[in-house]
Image (tube, rainbow, N blue to C red):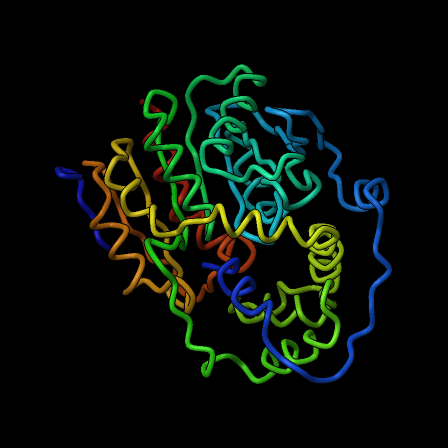
Length: 322
């Protein structure tokens, strides 16, 4: 653990870079659900749907106490936080939403996925909920909008938590990928325009240590919701055109709020050595901590919720008590 008190990838990168690859056996096309069926299948009892800045937004607001805003990574949804939200909502007000074009929010109607627009979505949602200051938490590729918001809105951010983020460009060595993942990518090439369950199963398995977390239910949800995004090929082009992991270090250098960096020891996508240390060094916050979570892969909230919460909760107790 690195600590300074007196001074004090991501899955998105993997999936995005692998989209064009492969050749192999044919996958079975799933029965795609329309929007109404997707909401019926995957909305939570506390789900709400609103429009903010011209964009449909699916969010969940649970618990009472100091407010926390949780931002999921690429190709995930607010369901990525299920295990964390279950525990944290006992003592905190936990807000999470599907960042466009993911989850049940869906694509932005004007194709705007810029950081400035994403900042307005956060402002609009928290204003709607009557929340002025809060702790913002982001994982994987959500590190970019999380750091950008914390840098741009210091008056609203009480504290920051970043888990397994990219502190710059991600360079993946495809030769090191598991053979099962390579086979799924090859099969995926045979049906451009959609991804089968095996594609998502192998990507998920490559990003967790605890393989039991990749249940049939999780795989089916990832398949159905992500294929919703692929109805319009322009959506993916707009999202990736607006993405810039390279800006994150500059935004970290502008963050002054207390910040906790959580890093998985077995994160092979945004490694501790390449991204964790770089993020810690870039942070301007005087109160900053880097905690390493053992036996955990890149998808921390899914893979090791209990172990990561053990390192998160003391930080939250301290910073929200101020």
